[in-house]
Length: 415
Image (cartoon, rainbow, N blue to C red):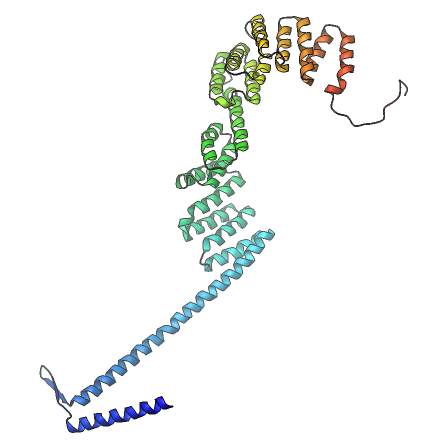
């Protein structure tokens, strides 16, 4: 109240002072422009300026007031669109999780049209269309996602590649993934899908070339990489003969198979599965002597019981020389069951039946394997030593037969 009183008092004092000044000396102002002149007092001019300023200020406020309702309308419309988009997105995602594909596609597509992040809705809608088997609808929604968010090309391309892979469209999927790999060479999902496509296409060479990158980016662990590498080289050995024309002779088959074997990395040359398949294929084309030389070279470099056992399955150029070489290994490896099995087989190739029996028995003593037992049984049966074979079976049945459950058995020879 005091402040208002002081303000009114000052206003009256200042007003009285200005009134007295206007009466004492009104002042004189002359404005001239070309032939036009305006004469007035100083105080009138000041009053006109104050009134003009007030009118200008009022007009600016009026114009601003006209604009504000438009902005408010636009802001209201934006909030309304956002609420509708959120509501439809929620309904669409619920329908998608429930497997209601048609409803999910409809809600998510509608939500995308009003959303600030339309690519997310379009991708989810594309998944719903894909689940309905609607390829054209899926592609159309993915293209809308690209148009709405060009910077998400890798994510959209990966989604499309996944759909193509699920549809079995392997060639378009591969082209898509190769393009994505140029854009994002270290993307693990691109590499993972590439691996799956190559597997489906049985492109073993491309897979072998991709494996270093799979390892660098941690797409597969060491065990998975080892299994994949083994599978690739096994399949390449298989394909080396199946892709040849039917009129190819044995020499051409041998050269082709040898090239595939030479492409096997050093650390896989002692892999039992690879060695076994390689020797089988060499045997099929009548090239056991060449396979023997390869195995012998590997064994000389590094002793390996898998190679030693495979060596005994091959018919070399000189069976006696082959047996002598294997006997030479006994000095350093006197208690090796695999070597004894090989010596038994090579003795049979040289028709040294007594030596073969001794080696098989020694091998079975060191390691009671079914394979060794079967070799010994077969040889005894063909030598006519059926009683000895029966005694052997009776004495060692429990060691080679699978563990059977305890069941009641008949007593004696009764019914």
